[in-house]
Structure formats: C-alpha cells, structure tokens
Amino acid sequence: MAQADIGQTIAKRRAEILKDWGHQLRDGGALSSGRLKEAELDTQVREFLDLFVQAVSTNEADTARKALRQNVAEVSRARAIQGFTPTETATFIFSLKQPLFDALTQEFGKDSAALIQGLLAVTEILDGLGLHSMETFQKSREEVIIRQQKEIAELSTPVVKLWDGILALPLIGTLDSERTQVVMENLLQSIVEHGADYAIIDITGVPTVDTLVAQHLLKTVAAARLMGADCIISGIRPQIAQTMVHLGVELNVVSKANLADALGAALRATGRTVATIKSASGGSALSKA
Amino acid sequence: MNAPVTDTMPIQSSDDIVRVRQEVRRRAAAAGLGIVDQTKFVTAASEIARNTLDYGGGGIVRLEAVQDGARKGLRLIFEDHGPGIASIDLALTDGYTTGGGLGLGLSGSRRLCNEFAIESKPGEGTRVTIARWK
Ligand SMILES: Nc1ncnc2c1ncn2[C@@H]1O[C@H](COP(=O)(O)OP(=O)(O)O)[C@@H](O)[C@H]1O
Ligand SMILES: [Mg+2]
Image (cartoon, rainbow over all chains, first blue to last red; front, top):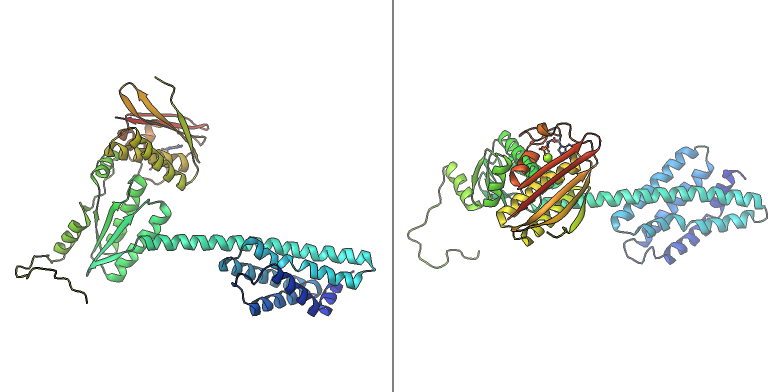
C-alpha cells in the first residue's frame, strides 16, 4: 500500500476520525483545566489532520511534513507557555493513533499486509511528531524559566531616583554573574534615561564581596563614568572593608558609610544642601495628600 | 586530637559556590569565629571555590573542624582534576590571571587565612587547603 492510500483513507473518513480524536482528547482531560477553549481545540485538531493528510499523500510531502512539524511545534509551545504538563501536551499527538488505526482497520481489514504497512507508517510519523512535540515543549519551558529569572532579577534590584540627577541602586543578596549583568545594565540604562550625574550603589545587603563582585563593581563604575555619571558606593560594612584590603582590591571610587551620607555628598556635589527649617511649628510636617 | 569529622560538598556550578559560602559561614560561626574572621574566611572560600569551578572544571570541597588544643576553627580542602597550575609562584603573584579576572583570588586568600597550601601537578589537578581559627 502506498502512502497516498493512507492519505486517501484519512481524507475519506475525516469527519469520523475528527470525532473520535476529539473524544479521546476530551476523555484525556484536554479541556478540563480550562486553559484551552473548545473552539481552539477544534481548530487545532482540524489543522493538524489536514496537514497530516497532505504529509502522507502529496508529491510535495517534504514541504507538507515541514509544515506539519511547524504546526506541532506551535501547538506544543503554546501548551508549554499555558502551563500544560508534558503528558497533556504529548497526548495531543498520541491520542490520534487509535482513531487512525480504527480507520485503517476498517479500510484494509482483509488485506493484512497493507494494514500492517499502513499502521507502521502512521506510527512512525506520529512517534516522530511526538518526540518533536516533547523537544519543543522542553525548550519552551526553559525559555519561560529563563525569562522569569530575568524578571525576578530586574524586580529585585530596582534603580530608584532619589533626586533630580541622582539615582540609587540598592543591591541585596548574592551577586552571581548572571544577576549582576542584568542589574548593571539596568543601572546604565537608567543613567542615560535620567541624564543622571550621580549613581549611588548601595551594597549594605551584599553578604560577600569577593574579587568577582569587586570586578563587576569596577566595570560598572567605569561604564557609568563613560555615560557621564559618577558613582558613589555606600554601605561597605567594616568587615567587608577589611576583607577587601587584605584581598588587595581597590575600588578607587568615593565611598560612604551609608545611603544617607552618600545622598548628602551627591546633593552637595550638585550644589544643593539639606537644612533644618528653624520656624517649623512642631508636630508632623508630613500630611496625607 | 580526635580524628576530624569531614564532610564533602560538590562544586559544579555557581549555585554550588553559593551553597559552599553559606555552609562555611554557618560552620565558622559555630566554631566561634567573629564576624570579621567569618567574612574573611567565607570570602577566601568563595575565591578558591570559583577557581575550582572556572579553572579546575569543577571538583569538591572537604570541610573539617580544626580542633587542636586552643585552636578552634575550620579547614577547607578544595580538589579538582583540571589542568593543574604550571607555576604556583606565578599564580600567587598579585594581579596574575589567565582568565580575565583581577588575579587576586589566590594571593588575596593567602592573606585572609591562617593556613594556606597549594599542591598541583600539571595534567592531574589541584588541591588547595585553607584554614582559619580563633
Ligand atoms: N584550580 C585551578 N586549576 C588551574 N589553574 C588555576 C586554579 N586556580 C587558579 N589557577 C590559575 O591561577 C591564576 C590566578 O588565580 P586567581 O588568583 O584566583 O586569579 P583569577 O581567578 O582572577 O584569575 C588563574 O588565572 C589560573 O591561571
Ligand atoms: Mg580566582
């Protein structure tokens, strides 16, 4: 039996196969999570089956197979992003086996040689697509995780504007290379956006400053300078200062004990000062807007 | 002196280095090291662990308590089966780096510890031992 006959068989029994496959998918819980709408699923199965028919019958089978793989990749990717499990995703492909086997059995039931050939051909294609589906799923999940990690890194170290032209970057936690990269890029971008003159990098919340962290700090200070901003490093705790001296690391940058002192220095350097108002009438000067 | 209790931790990723730092800090504090000594030793451990990963291609660290008369502290033995260090004198020179670093990890760590030793055979690997006590 030529592959074209499989295509003809499927095309002839299209309606029935779609119905069976739909049942299989629903029974397998494809819709139960609510992540997928009924209409979406119907479109997906129809598109897939039509491409499948082309892939096993046309002269342009190569092009059709590519299109089919593309389709599987899109469906799997979407499911990965929507939070489907690997099993739920793979089921989309594998649950088509039974309906196709049934259709072929009815068509070639007596011609067992043709039937076996047909079953083997269908199995081979579906298994290949199943693997492709899993690979795409896996890759997409990894992309999601990497994106989330970046988002967390950005969220956990916001660049804050303290005053016109004065930014602060409060660093908290372990500065591994990946996170440091994101943090530093954020700072440089904010310097450009705000046209900042001073950037205060506060390391009160950094537990360990080793030579790798120091190198990241040095690079950032140098890059900030190129963007026209001077850096002040604040919050170097005494034990960290001592350790850096023994390591032999010199940051060659203005440093202040804490963020408040650093802000004061930056204000003075930009011609401003913070003064106490003598005539303050006592009580809280802050009122709710 | 009792036989030291030894534990082993893997160093195969950046996350492992973070875990080693945390464990070293915990044990250093438990051994009674003050905050300055803890910070010095954790920083040295971070340097050597990073070298084990970056230059040694990964390895392990053994952690053992130092309990020698009045001395109470912590000893760490880092081992890898990487390319080894051709010249230890050169590697211990301030500023010497083959990996675009600051070149202060080994020399700086030596200044941060009470005990510091490197054994290395080109082609076989590297063992760095550091210890700090009260
Ligand atoms: N475990 C190791 N295996 C092989 N080479 C090492 C190892 N540790 C250090 N080195 C060598 O010693 C040099 C100096 O190390 P270090 O002082 O930590 O500076 P850095 O890490 O900045 O290069 C490294 O650049 C490397 O060539
Ligand atoms: Mg190093």
